[in-house]
Image (tube, rainbow, N blue to C red; front, side):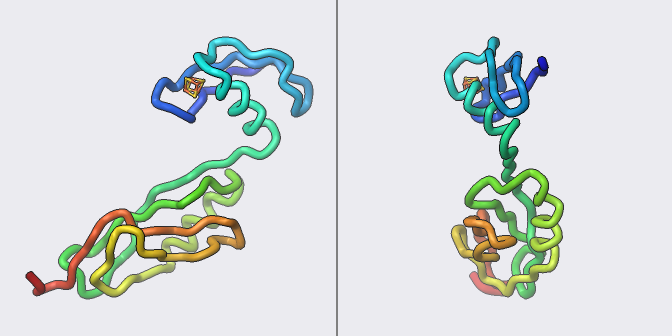
Length: 123
Ligand code: SF4
């Protein structure tokens, strides 16, 4: 089979034309580096994605903080991950790197804060 994949490993975003049988990649073209082939193989065998989102904060100078995953998780679990993140409300203050959810969905992945938010009225 033939299919075009957009490699998302780096900002070049190469359009990788791949020929494959099942999960075996026979040939690739259009990739600027070998990671393009590795990306296609990963997409065919175990596609993974990472996400950034936001979480509510109580008592903060802002109502939300931004969060991200520390590792990509199976693509099929992204909606479940968003649901888990949506359930969370943090208490201000929060700092970059604070762990919001440890072992998200049983994966080797945490959700961490990416924006400092101080307590309302402090400063
Ligand atoms: S193939 Fe290489 S250069 Fe192209 S987007 Fe992927 S990692 Fe970047």
